[in-house]
Length: 154
Image (cartoon, rainbow, N blue to C red; front, side, top):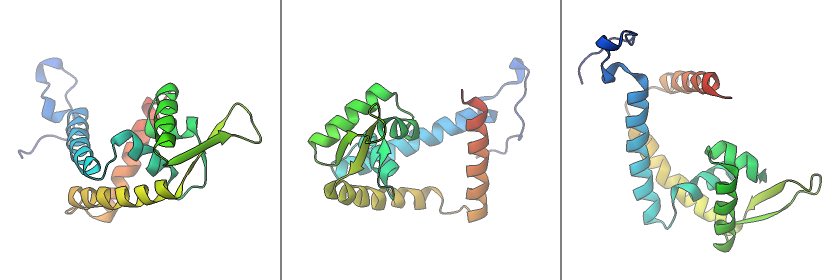
């Protein structure tokens, strides 16, 4: 890979897509999604189910809207995903005892097992993606991406 300047020119005549951070974020995301889709398909899951399973990992319960927020999916779409996962026996949902407008979601035993299997598969992709990256660099990347995400949030 050729060395490119750290800064992106603001002059459109000097623009090179390889200097545009969104180019690299999009390329990385595309490669990651391709790998995770193939990996999940082999164990009978898909990316939407993966996102729900990982949102609920190590949590007792989340609302559908919280899961949608974590997964960056619109609420009506997430509601349909949760309904499909209920049919598959991976989650159960019920109305919140404290707020009738909220639907809470929990993993079933089958959901916990599917989540563990998916976690192992995804962790192999994680290790490959970050095999030559130090822990401090990962922390720095997470902090930077968090700040950038905050900058673009509503």
